[in-house]
Image 1 (tube, rainbow, N blue to C red):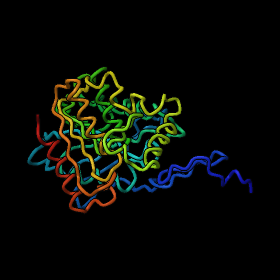
Image 2: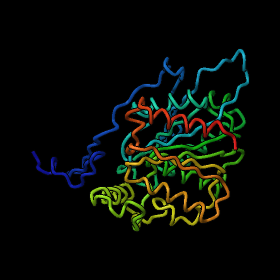
Image 3: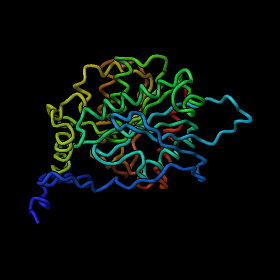
Length: 321
């Protein structure tokens, strides 16, 4: 056996390992569950193809509706971007499928969970471009003549939200900036929800100054791995403080969720400071979950803190500004 087949050249545990012979081992996020009707939440899901050429798809979720009582009911539209460091996980992973079932039921929304292409096979900025393509596909349903009947019939484009966790929250932020700078005709992006966002930078903020060096280097190394053409950790895609368009967020409300034991926590607070400093005209709220780590709610969804976080996100969506 060729020794290069088991020689690791880049170890980004607990997510991914790259071997000398070029093969990739994804350590998490490869399990998938089919779309279904979930009797616990009364939410139905299905998979759709957004772009055959680019292999972009999505899973759509809809709550059980009383069409007899409300035949023309419209629901807020949530577009969700999953996390996983831009290189692992999909909307079809059990944690994401289950989370979307729950948030769709709790907030009473229709949701589109985007399956963007992942690094390293598809390095950044491909995930951002796929996400923008997906948004344009969603908006093609604005006048009720798109390819998906659920979105045509039930989506309220006057109450649109973007959300994501970790790398997906990073994407959600950039999609909101693109709405603000390029526009999506006919929609109202009411707000964005950024959960444990993968933001970073060269200069340490807050508790990062005393963080273990391996945690700091993981973030640096992961970014260079998924975005090999990047200038580094101060890339505007990763460090919002370096993004000249940050103040042009195309929404009026932002919910930032951080976790006390997450090494990315202070980046969430710093993001709020940045928006206030540059004169963002909307409302920014930060909620911090005590005693928890990065994306705890996906892997321990029934704990009190996860239920509380879910309730706060649903409340944010259902509170029109």
